[in-house]
Image (cartoon, rainbow, N blue to C red; front, side):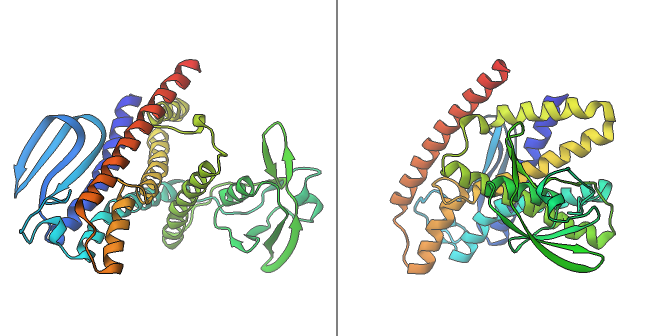
Length: 345
């Protein structure tokens, strides 16, 4: 069952991402030669309105092949390279954007069903900084060092990525605002810093709150992804923290097993929550300014927009080919690491 759920999640992520490219490309008058879900040999193919729609054997990805997308010379007005800069930029950016849209709409369902987690304190751990600073149950954390807090999880994320530094905490009690400074305490057994506060209970809100906190949910996972990437660049994330398709499939299996006892509804709810995380992650990763990714293509389009001169298509194609080779090597490494970790566990 977990493999079926994994492929459903994967198909949704790919479909929305490539669908974003496809829809905006078509609206901008760019010819779409192929719309592919997966890679490799075709399992299903249909030609409609000038486009081949294909489902291929290897499900780990997909692509939209636009007319002239890889820099082939063409005099056609529907060619990607002959389209205006704004049309090309919009078409490329639409893929990651649709991943954020998918994450938002799934968040509406999850938060509408089980609520959101406001940063309200429900209890305190004895002897920890929060108790010593006079924080009380019922207080609402407003900001940490001026950084607005929307969800209870924001507090844990802030402490994790700021490694024990003193924090100016703004909190609200009975409609009044207070400030205090706390230095989080390191708990060796957990390997984390804590204020010593308890919370995270979900609250169901009205329609406007559901929309508001759905945006907060997507923002949380986007921020988490960005901070994780920065940690990786600083060398603070090990290879065991990386996960590819095999690792994600294993994650889906773990979530499925943990949710099984709670019934079908909670299985789907937790799968949707996982899809929100993965969709936001995919959107951010594709916006990285690395060759072959959407972000890398956007860099070249921006250079053209700023300079008013076309980038040599052969140079751009070479950069993207190099990037694709690097990504394939990384994918093989991550896949091997995932398999080794699963069997070792």
